[in-house]
Length: 343
Ligand code: GTQ
Image (cartoon, rainbow, N blue to C red; front, top):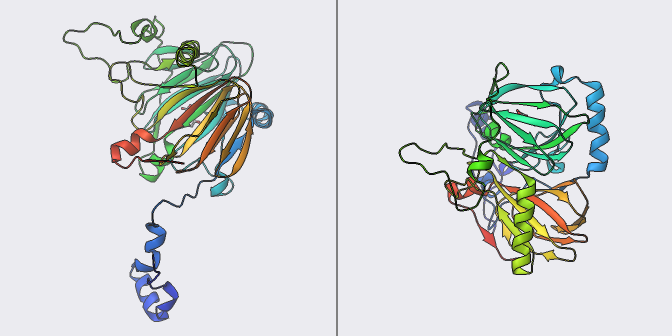
């Protein structure tokens, strides 16, 4: 494209001043920045947070700051492209590593953004959502959709760590982010009925008049995900990917966030298309390397890494590997611009 647009310094000083005093700005010097040709110019850079370096710093937070003073004791995985202290990993994805020590309680609150909890390690943690106590085992996904009360507790003996994935940056951008605190929820005398209701794919509880809840399943135990991935890979003889969906509708589990479990047998390389979504990856288990926009990321168990929009990517598993990927694809599809391009 020939560059014929005028620049700001071509304009007379008095005119620029006059515009500024009237809270006006010329579009044309900024037009290419706002609407770059052909593809977005992401601010986000590739991030890699090895668990081996993150964990000691998170445990130190456990010594330095009691949960009562933190409300949520979390280290935010901060986008290297946005400078120190950015409260986001990509344009839309907030990632935080949360620590809960034995007998601690993270108090009940409700907020507009939605969250996914991906359990990294430790036994005995739980999240209570709308009164249902949801056990948290390593690899489990627990959802706390926007508008649902939730608190976290820990009945085990060792620290529990999970990855929080929220659409918080989007809500901050929309000036729609807020929370309300509340008393700890009364726990219902039953645990997570969805595990029985959706025990087999393709079967849902029989209903006549009453409607299924909007969020019928809030916990996706890793044991079931792993066996489904292995069964699929054994059938196809290749790698496997399964999307987490609402079992009543088949749609993504949250309005803005899409989750995918990936199984890469040792030696597999994946070269997915370029996607218009930014992405975060968590290594549930395994070891290997990804090349993202030319940058090599060598990852192992419990590491987390991220990719900007339209990143070129390959993922190579050295040992049998399970990854969970999260993207804002549901949001982009609702806005009508989700796109994939060949590598
Ligand atoms: O556990 O509810 O990492 O509200 C950030 C905000 C966790 C939570 C975060 C939150 C939470």
